[in-house]
Length: 360
Image (cartoon, rainbow, N blue to C red; front, side, top):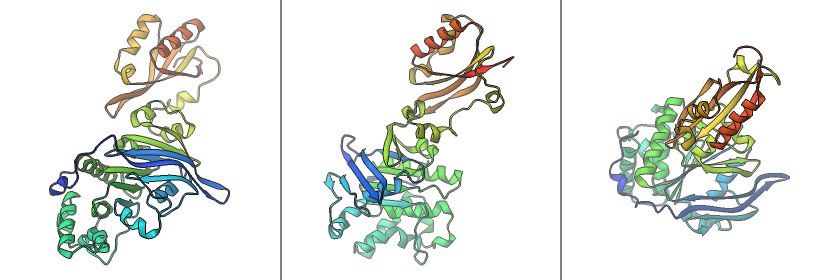
């Protein structure tokens, strides 16, 4: 976790969780016959980190452009801090844009300007005095852990350092909302973790509301409070991160999560068939079900042999979320049915993947 938060921590008051910084109402945007946004309604509460995830072409970029006033929706409403912005003119949008900071995938730094000048650029555009710009830049570079790089130029920085400058620049005008557009996609995994830790640290210390756009579920897992899954211009699933990870309801959510969730080993999956002497079950558990003694209770309530083949329990937002693969002798269908009924009664999600002939 970044430890360089100092004077800037006092710049914003404590967040009021009941207040929406962003509210989208039935947002629609078409490009020809293609619906980039098709009735999106969404809110982001003050002090919250909301992750929006989807595949390429799902509508993420159009959504973020509507939020910062670069794109006008065909219909619907965009509220930022309670003000509807979708029909404002360019001059009216200027002060609002200063309330919305933006960090980008490819940093967008000015190569001929120092780190200090890049961080202070929004204040220069706003016509603030040089002394104020330097003071604010010093605060922000300390905040992001780059105080010693103030006089350096972007060419001498690593990718992670460049993104830290981008974050400092986005915070320069003391925004109410920070938009992160695939901000870690160009970074290696270790640097990604450090940038996400910095964003979470800033969120907690400054109460800053963050809306991040990504195609990586690991980013959502690491930092977001809630997640909204977008597909073909529609929000197909939304909720606390741990809940969506535990029980993804949409096909696109399951697909995006597939690389992060335990999978049946390939050798065993290849042996699955409609019949066989062992039934193979997939068991998804979360919350109190995952905390409890589910399997030992199963052994007591439905006596008989079963084996754990694979799986594990993870913790997301302090909630246990797990997937287990079990084998149960299939020679007695009634026994298998009783085991499944018991597990489902205990709020486990159970799927019969198939059967295996011979030992598992």
